Image 1 (tube, rainbow, N blue to C red):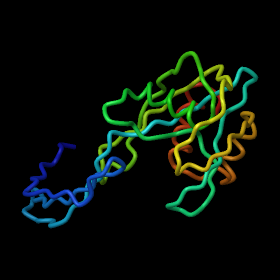
Image 2: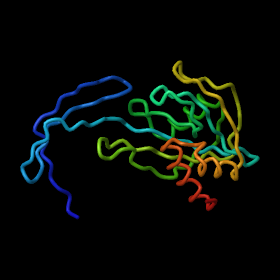
Image 3: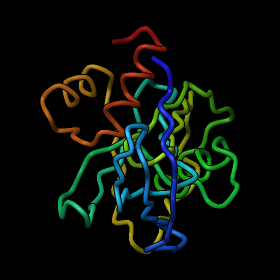
Image 4: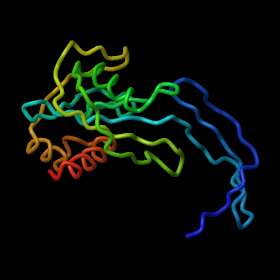
Length: 182
């Protein structure tokens, strides 16, 4: 397939904050159709960390999410700050949310979060031999509890819906495939 040429005729930022940038573009499609408000969410991207302890358990976070008004079980994750390197962000988020640290983070790949509205990617990192080194220091809006799960339990949680967030499901698949532990 050849990439179609969409023409951006105008653009206006509706939200411009450190946490979200949302713009409305007026675009013209190749057949001449004009879409007056095509919304695009700008973001540097996100990270997800699949941390494994020396005794082969996976570090998870159970946290309240305001948008869904639910508590979710997830892999540690977070937004890239400014021009922060994804690996640095992964190390920072793992330590902040869980108090765990690993000597090395392995880049397992990336995927687009929502390509219909954004070019933001999620970067997935594997942290082997993660050790608990300090108490978590979550942001003010993060209500988090750390949990550990064995691989069999983790796969069961993925399958039965106890883990229900897209970023964790996609990252888990990437890492389990990478480890040949699907």
